[in-house]
Amino acid sequence: MLVPHEHVQVMWGVVWPSIQAALRGTMSTLPRFQEAVFDGRLMLWVVRKDGRFVGHFTLQEVFGPEGDSGLRVVTLGGEGGKHWVPLVHSLVAEQVRAGTYDSGLATCRPGMMRWLTRLGWRVRRYEMEYRNG
Image (cartoon, rainbow, N blue to C red; front, side, top):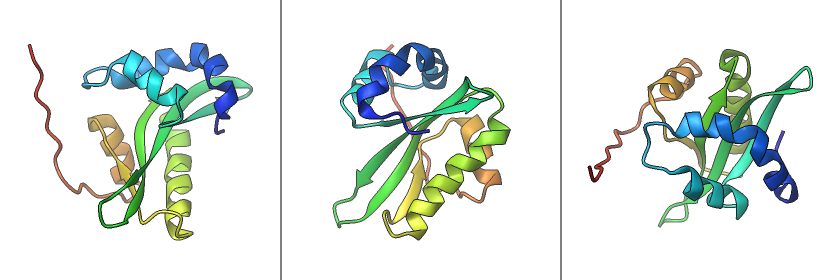
């Protein structure tokens, strides 16, 4: 379920442990990520099962210099992902097929990469990072 922008701050208390775990080992910090969610640069989705929170994912619209567009999966996290990650794939694929975006993209750590590879996504390039310290 997409969290409407006006409810993001209310839901933050529920989803932040899942987001914090998803960001572990990345260059993103929780405050910077929270700011991007709160100001609408990232779309927050929650996954519920039997009325309780089980996971989250965040999506971002991206636009290339030549007018191409993509829907990027930025984070996935929670429990029982094997049951709901295919729904994330379906959501992104549906938007690409409808012509809303030219492609579906993901910036992943190894676990997310395994899930998406099983769903037919392909590794397009390697992303590297450099950290101070």
